[in-house]
Length: 302
Image (tube, rainbow, N blue to C red; front, top):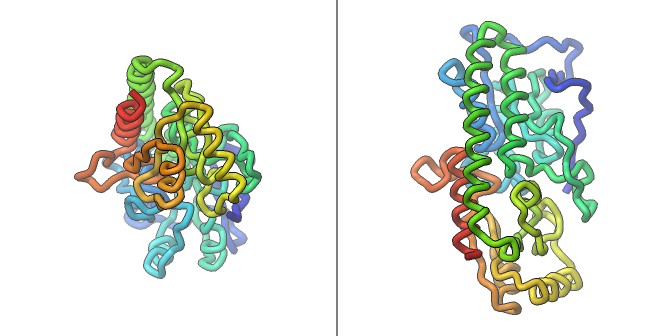
């Protein structure tokens, strides 16, 4: 997977593309058009923006951002955005080429900026593991980046963004404590995670889980594992006593099911990691997504 690099010098970034000016693009009706790439980012940003700005989201629900390629209508929507909120760390691997082709200028808010990432041991993702949102305390940084980024273009909304961010940060602290309370009911020796790809590293570190292995031994699913890697994972599963392989709702199950048939463990396919669910689903907001995933994981491991 090819990643793009954005070199930054501060926590709030104005990325100017194909332009000699670094001023934000003119806003319509006094407020900017703001777009978040992923659904969970859109929800986090909406909590900060409140009723002052409607945050648009580029990717549909349950679409894997690792495999996403913009459609013509997506490019049109990107062209209209004056502020673009992304996760960063190369998570949106398609974005740099798309913006280079698009031209123009827009302010970029990189939610993960300022957090030191875990490495990708596979070397496939040299910027590190981008799945920081799976630790609610890291999402506090996301809220701060979004607050400051919106304020940069809309200074008149500073009090609103600050107040909303403070309220949301308090909710994130509450979510973190809720997860700890739930996880503490599961003995440490049962906290064993096998995943389809390395998407739960920050979650595992925050809540004392052990990552036994991943079907795709990288933070992306775009590079297939070798036969030797699969054989190694099967051996590790057998020796560790792990009982479940966890998959995101949109991931291909074929290899996980093959490993399950070799090892006798079960496959759980209804985590929401890369995307929220539809509004009527089990994970329509970021906070509900984390609660859903924790409940699914603990039910499977009990």
